[in-house]
Length: 409
Image (cartoon, rainbow, N blue to C red; front, side, top):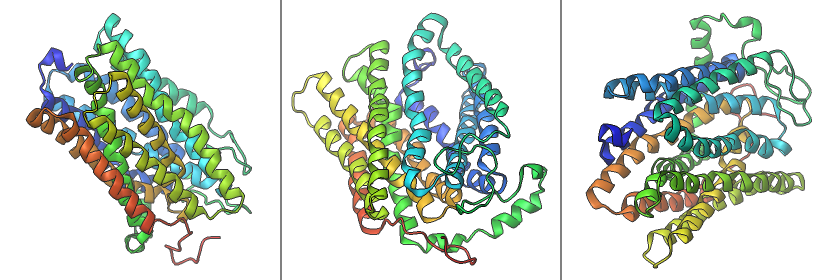
């Protein structure tokens, strides 16, 4: 698309970052809606929105305002999904199995990236770039139909499998949705009353919440800027063609799948054996931040390394960042099962800012400095290291009594 429409790096950065405008705007609404209606319903609506908006992109691609708007809609649809998934996990999964549940669900991001990067180049080369958006949009609709067919079926139990239906309160202490499946016609007044009951002030008085907010921002800066610009880096800096760059871009998410399969049971086993949950989350998140920082520093310094060693460094660092699924991404549920989706909505809203600012800023700096070290790697290293310091100082997984109803059991 960039070649066809003659975009420079700044314009490409604008188009890519527009996704995150919608992503940021939908975080808090997504968390609130998931708490009120249940994560399942919110997830279904989100997938429909982003699938239809994806299929619309080729139609409006030549009209920049339309293209940006369609990307914003994709971001809105995807933005409600993390909170919806977090709501499902928080209501269904006990503490000792939470790392694995989060790893399986959010690990789908890496698996989807692998499949997308593998199939997109041949589809583009044989059918044109427009076909990718039509096909991926259709796949989302097909997924929705399949997911809807599971309605009412319990896919798991309290021993560790996800229940994608509405959970009921029981002896496991899991929290039910604020409305039942029969209450799908709840009025706007119900939503407003639910939002009034959310202890917003208590959230922002918690040091642990602020640690999650900053850590999410820092991790997202490195993740989103690399997600958006590494294929270009591989193509322009390492002189790889489209297919080679796509294959190389598969390596970080592929590595993430491997690391996630190791990190999740590692964290759960430590907790099951009596290690303090906060200590486990701190260990995992430190690995997730320090590892990519080190490998990015090695990649940004001119050591005369051959391209494939740089690829190996970046792949290793970004793969190890998946320890965050057993660190930061479990902490929302650790400190409050009831408000886990809203807490993720808060931190993910701030975490989406790097997608807006960081992705566009990287393109601007690249045009200005022509240096990948300054534009891509240096800011990421800074945020990874400062995020580590804040996390170690203030993070906590101790359950917190945000509401007036008493402490969580």
